[in-house]
Image 1: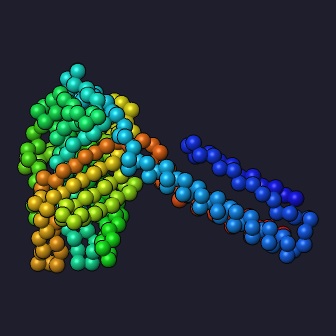
Image 2 (image 1 turned 90 degrees about the vertical axis):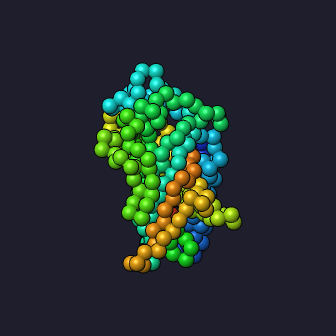
Image 3 (image 1 turned 30 degrees about the vertical axis):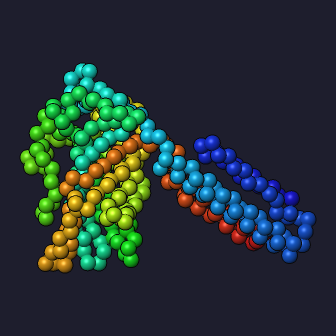
Length: 299
């Protein structure tokens, strides 16, 4: 009898799959039945694996945010003087959106999320120099489509930008785009992120809610600003009806604008990333099962 054992560990989850094909001991019909049972067992294990990963990943929506310490004196070039470091777990922003929506449902959108302050355990944190000697803001650029009321994103790229001297002026969204009144000539990137997941919702009061999860990393030369930065960041964006406007254009597009939306940004623990690898790992298991089954049937 040939035995097989498949064992792997994923975080705190250990899974062992084992069995035998009964070769050399039974006739072809019995072997076929055992092979089918083995395949079903492996498929069930793969489904269990994906379910476990989804359960663990779902904790990111309710888990406490990761505390971080940023030091503006260690950016390149420095944004602040020695002693300007601070510790927080939440970033508060004011949001500005410009989105061009085609009649087909596709769209291109740009955000500016101006950082207005920080919190730690729900209490305001003083970040020395913020919005006086320097500014911080996120840019978000994405494309996607809305079909039958369902929105999907093709990409959603985030950058954390620094405004030395806090001289960009006032952000705003107009029919022509979203920008700062004085431009961004001397700004530089501190870090960037790429899409993990995104969802949009409209509640009964007409308030728009957006959730974006991004995989984040520091920009080249800027690691000292962040210290130990968590690899995932969540964006929670809220837009009351009074801050949203949609203007149809002569070419059939509709321009959507947000001025003064509310945002909260949090870095989250790594277990949320299990959802990223779950599908691939399960697919690998299924692929291996299928190849093994076909190979054994040919022997």
